[in-house]
Length: 393
Image (tube, rainbow, N blue to C red; front, top):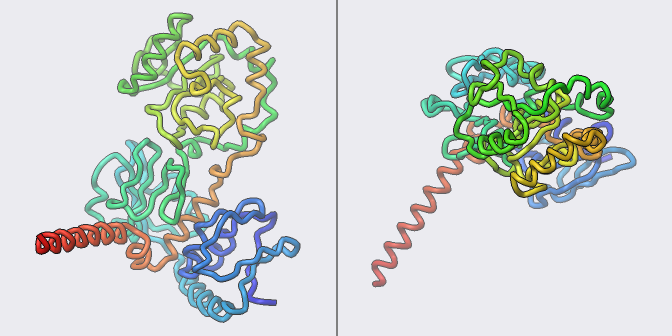
């Protein structure tokens, strides 16, 4: 048979076996952009590889005769380079207060696959939105944000963000994934009869941001129906900030789960924390939240279009246990299947690709240097054009 790449059991992502064995090689740079899910091929760049055949019966992928020798040579070369790359030198900066650069979500995850060294002279820097220290580093820069600040590819080479558009430079990995095991939200849920006993209070809000005016206005409007307990540092009306957020939320039938702002793809822990506690979220923020969760399982502001209509729905559910139970019993995920974003292997595959690329290539051909060169070329071309026009005039 032709040069064979074994397919992952049950047709999981194509990139997984490649990255585990040979890394994100130059040969597969463009192939990795394709999304392979449940044995379906969603796309491929034909100018890179002439023929890619998915043999479903044998669960094998193989290349055409014309490319076999080239594939083999490049694979062996890149495999050798990858085998030597057992250690990755990384660092973190500009993350939120209390972030530990040595022990955090990323180091714990990457340590399963790499010998991770956190140092002051890294080859790869992870940075976020809480500062500008990243500007002093001269290495491959990976921007991570759980907030509503999109990546700027003048400052970073790659990004892990909330952005819905994914490509070889950006991976969508929403903040809520870091807040717990999403599989624990799958149905069957705890029986409503049990949850009802713990719902001794009406509605809560836990926030510290005084600038999110949409959320504040809604809080005051809903409070005209019944008291909404505010347990955070802002608008606190229960005698002081709470100590255990999850225990606090679990006492309430409803939880105000408004994001700081409305932006497509921007879904945070504000939605999933009430889910973990059995409290029904009242959600506003990501208009495309259905990519993440089932809007029928909570009160989605965009399904109603106004604060008044949302409050009217809340009153209906509050006064009718049968209606409340009907919504409560809806699965949090569409089809009761965890969405594709909640997969740590996607993050590992994406980062492995960056780590195993030759550093110059990772930056020059795909990273921020390419972006800078693009803008330089535009400026140069514009200058030449203006010079020619001035002569013609």
